[in-house]
Amino acid sequence: MNKLIRYCSLFVILAMAVAVSGCATTATKALESDASAIKLRSMQTRAFDTTDKKKMMQTVISTMQDLEFVIDKADLTLGSVTGTKFVNQASVTMTVTVRPRGEKQLLVRANAQYGIKSVDDAATYQDFFTALEKAIFLTAQQVD
Amino acid sequence: MKKLNNTLKIFLTVFLCLSIVGCATVPTGFLKASEQSLKDRQLQMRQYETKDEQKIVTSVAGVLQDLGFILDNSETELGFVAASKKADATSGGQIAAAVLADTVGIAAALIGAPCYTNAVSRCDKEQMVKASVITQPSLDGSKTVVRVTFQRIVWNMSNLISRIETVKEPDIYQKFYDSLSKAIFLEAEQI
Image 1 (cartoon, each protein chain N blue to C red):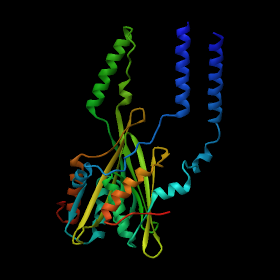
Image 2: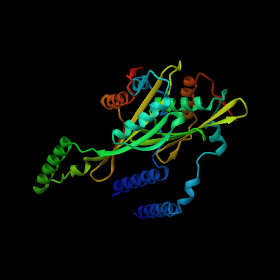
Image 3: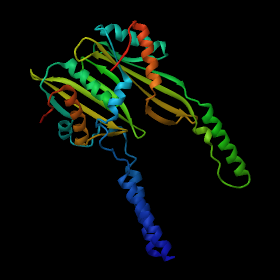
Image 4: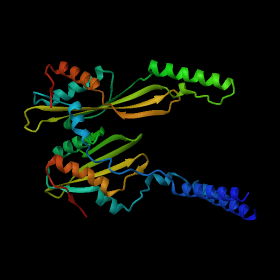
């Protein structure tokens, strides 16, 4: 019986520790990211051998539409496209940016969020770039 | 007593593990193209025999306004228009069924069975429909391709989101393209 009481009190202490640590300000979480920035950037970015930004953006948009995204925003100057899709009652938001890299290439970066979580799975981004490659008939090149 | 001790311990341990680990994970493979996407294209895309993309984009904005949408965003150079509208989502059938379920529930509660359901509060109340239109030249450049996608978010009587989905009903897409064809005096061609 004593053992049980000890176990219960241990549980209460642990639960309290979890609760207290959970009380830290959440404002700092706004700029927090889970994976290391460089690793994340490399899985989210590919380079393409073209300089036609408009065509690349139109292809990005149609690829996203093929993946069931509804486009919320697009801006040719910034080169950004944002869309939302729903997966099992959760919303997935993705922003794709297109910008020049040197004289001959375009850099495409995709950022996805699933609910309130950032997607940091390399295979998921690879799926997107595979679809994009097929749509634009160019090879997506890994960038360091 | 000993058995109770053990059960309690197991329960507490499992509970603790769950609370530390958390159980929400991000699924994989949701950015993979599915076979469905080809079917969706047929549903959502039409092409028009004109090269005048600007005329189509302005007509799209007009048609969306005719259908009661508010324009949220646009980038004419990319041929993009996004719009949304709020609409009623109540359905007579759903409410009737819920009222029946609640009446049965209350009657059962009166004779002592605890099965009050409150189904009415879970009925759909209103919805937000989002439309997003993209126009671009066809592959050979002689025609203009239009693609529209609709999404909706439905709230129930308790103001909680009860459903989020991409709209797949052909009627809605057909209605949009009928209005657009009328606005630009051209016939929409299936792709």
